[in-house]
Length: 473
Image (tube, rainbow, N blue to C red; front, side):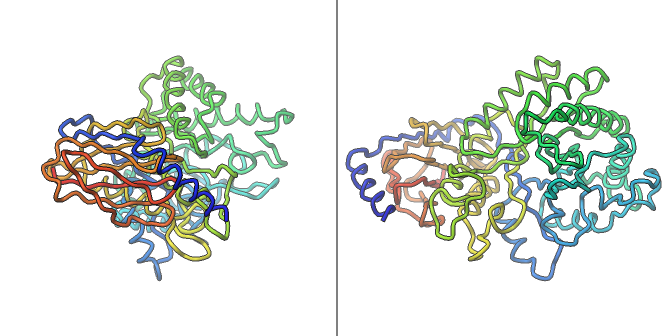
């Protein structure tokens, strides 16, 4: 009944508000190069190979540049991969002796990722540990220097062939993940909660991590100055953590190559404000040229975390609002201050996957990621585009030979029934093709009749939606 009522309102709006949003795209004007690393994720191959072909095919369709190794151990049950406690299980042993490491399962996973065409962004440390008040993997290390040596041995194996290892497998190495999280990543046993202002050990916890980060960074940069080493993948762009880290680095005469953090929410503007805020902070602290990496981001429903109702709704975790948030974000990332970005995305099903846990159906975010993966596959140049409406994002790109153009038009939370589009630099109206992603449609063709470079996109319903239009230039 509620959706029927909304559709009646939509019909009324269609009469009152036609073509209020206006988009322009100029394929004769190149503004920047397409940056593939901004379309990356935690999605990857699976360790268990008996039924993996379909999963590999889905990941290939989404066409990511990098995979980040965080939480991969959690989605591959029983696999001793990537996390430091699997690679170097007995902390009392000699970290300089290759016999004390167990690399083979992670070596196997590295090959699987390479076979999928994915580059590796390697997170040093542990996957998240939801064990409540008792911690094993996420407990604060007792010996920072020892952990730094273990990390050095891991990098040496994957980049320098040490211990029958690989050569130049990873350029980016991240120190830890979400040390500012709550009882799951950088923890005292006994339930320190970083979100509880009454807990007076939070400052101690942060001070310990600053010391740890600087110890590890200094050790790794001394042996691997050519690599990109940074972190620490904070839960958000938190100056109360980043500034002490940068001050400590400056005091030791070292510099991270990048800062990384996460964003979970439903306001694209906030994600990009974070980068501006970080740039200002870094300039003030004397590090004006650091790379910025947002290596977990995902839509969070307005109703809160993890909503995935048995019946579909536009604002569920991976439904149409989430998908259009994803496409809006991917479009804006290309011209942002960020250097890399990772959709989260890691598990292949459920709230953080691309398939519904109960039905097995591909969700709306799969189709959104596939859409942008297609643009990444076909296009190398970004072209000029504008939108008159804040809810509508336009992204134009073209192929290296200049013969094909793609225009992505995404309406997030918009209320207009249609979008007016004007394009320049299109050679013919005959070969214009368009598909729509909406609440009911998954990249289904829609008619486009272009005259004098102008046409109208008509939304199928009252919800968010996105269109991908392809042109011959």
